[in-house]
Image (cartoon, rainbow, N blue to C red; front, top):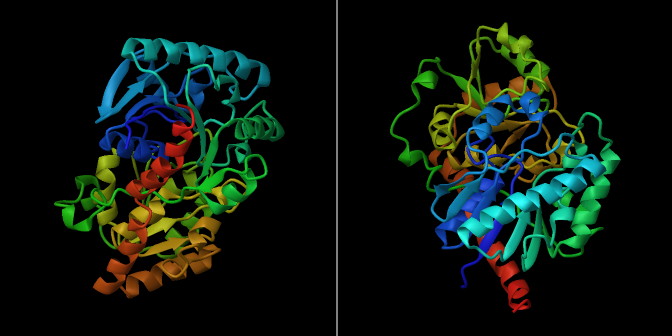
Length: 389
């Protein structure tokens, strides 16, 4: 297998609490000897509101390249203009970003094999980095997110142009794959995502002190706290099941969610974001794992990584009926409202999983390892790269 040079245009920073497919795939590519330049978010004025902590970190390292994992270098680009999805601003921003990335590539003396983007508005940057193959990894339906001053139809049009222009589209859920096929027939499903070594209950030596201080039983959620979270559902369950401690761990997007209903409840514990390396230890301390998401246009296309993280750690999972989670309905409990969700939590706690059940859940999760995803990626890209020789 040849070793390739990737440029990843990421929608999150490397050290963001929002660990996702972009991180897991980049790490696995690096482990296999490929090289990845992981381009973090180009900040703008509005970033001070949408991600103040991440923006403060980014301002301290503008223009810098740093090693973040074997084979993976992270690059923090200089700022761009606000309103990413404005057609006029985007045309300028993509040229600025191309300039910044080309400067970084010259410093590294790298020639790009694969340009791999997560941004639906990336079409103007295609061809500007000298890449041989272009990939759009559609991990989320960004057009379903409501951004100020931008119409959803505008983002959808940008994404349609991108899909039609790239060599391959990888989609994170069957629903996304089915939809993007209308723009690019070469659209493939790349589902799941789990590190089987890191998410191994046998490897956990101790629970984090912040979690250990919370009494059991613990119903836990780990992830970004934003408008996906059904706050009213969690609050209703916590009031109904007052002897259960509800633990929510992750960064709070205060401009998108109001957590006051939860802060007033003594058996609800809001813990700050942790490093991704710490996530398995926190999950180990849960008695049940929760996916209490609202059902809307965005979550209907969502594939929560925490699903396989919970299952890999042998934890019972209770989720609202997110379509992707329904794929594993035989291994999780599905509940559509607060009453049935609370009942599902009670049932899971009253009937702890057997060793056989935990092993079966872990086996399901391991089918979706990052290694399996990169196997698909390498097999798909190799003939495309060969054709460019």
